[in-house]
Image (spheres, one colour):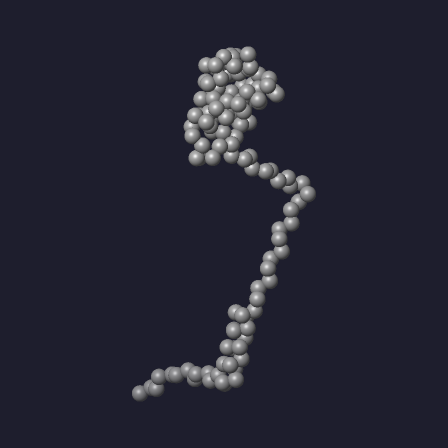
Length: 124
């Protein structure tokens, strides 16, 4: 009968095991260097977020009235403007802007004209 082949096991000295344990603990405990802050290019321009015109706790009629005032001031400074541009320029929601335009139109403060399928509003 043949004897099965056995591979001799490598014996590791106690000193070697302790050295491995110390180096493993040292790498875990070593403080990591903080990565430097990313450098910003001089060409990068930061854009400030537009402030929210009305907080959720403001009642709806008051939001509409405040937005109507903003529309009136915008039109007095910039003249006749398309509704789409006005919605983009103001910080309020589109439905509030539309309601405010209706309010101003009902009071006779603005005129609404449609030119080439573009609604334009202007002060009266």
